[in-house]
Image 1 (cartoon, rainbow, N blue to C red):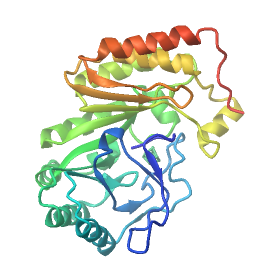
Image 2 (cartoon, rainbow, N blue to C red):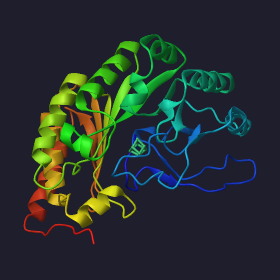
Image 3 (tube, rainbow, N blue to C red):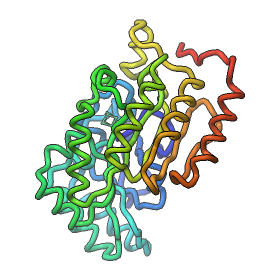
Length: 306
Ligand code: SF4
C-alpha cells in the first residue's frame, strides 16, 4: 500500500480487554469502509518508501494465528457477519502463502458467507508468488489487492525507494488478473514534485488504460516531518508541487482514464473537497469540481513545508 496522510486511517489503541490490541495506524482504501478490518501483521515488511510515515516507528511482525482467531471469535460472538474482510497492515499480501491460507480458512470457518478477503500488497509481494499460488489464493477467497503504484515515472519510483519499476508493476497486476484477483491502485498526486504533475498524469493514465484497475485511490502527497522526503525538501533535492499543481494533475489523469466502471476516490490534505465517482459515467461532474477548484486557486502561493 499505502500513503502518508490522514484519510482512511484509524488511530489505534487498546479497545477493551477482549479486543485485539492494534498497534500503529491502520490504513485501508475508503471503498473498504464496510469491511471487517482484521490485522494479521504489525507494521510494514518493507517500510522504506521515502514518503510514508505510517509504520516508521514499528518493528514488523506477523501476528500469531491464535490472536487472529480470537478476534474472529469475538466478532462472531457479537453477531458479526461481515460480507468482506480487509486484512491489515501495510503489506498483508507479503505474508507467506501458507500463513495467508491458514487465515483465509479461519475466516471462512467463522464467516462462511464472507464473499471477499481484500488487503494491501506491494508489487514485490505479488511477484514473489507463483501463478499457482495466486490462483489458489483466489480460490481461497482473495478478491482485491490494493497495490501501491504511487506514480507512473520510473525515476521518481527509484528516488522514493518504492521497490518496483513500472514494468514490474505491469507484470504483477497482469499476473493478479490472470488468477482472477482484482487490483486496486493507490496513487499520490504530487509525488513527482514541482513541475512534473502533468507528465506523471500522462504516464499513469497510459499505465491504467493498459492494466485496468478496479479502483484508484489518490491520497495526494502530504509529507510528514518524520519522512526521508521531508529531509530531501530541507536539503533542496526535492521541490514539492503546490496544491494547484496537484489538482491540475488529478484533472489531467481523470480526463484520460478509459476503463469502464473504474471507481475513483481522491483526497487532498489542504483542500476541503473530495473527488469520487465511477468512470466514465461521473467524469464530467468530477472534472467540473476540479475546474472550479483550479479557477478559485489561480494566483495562490505554494504551500511551504517549514
Ligand atoms: S510499502 Fe511503502 S507505502 Fe506501503 S506501507 Fe510500506 S513503507 Fe508505507
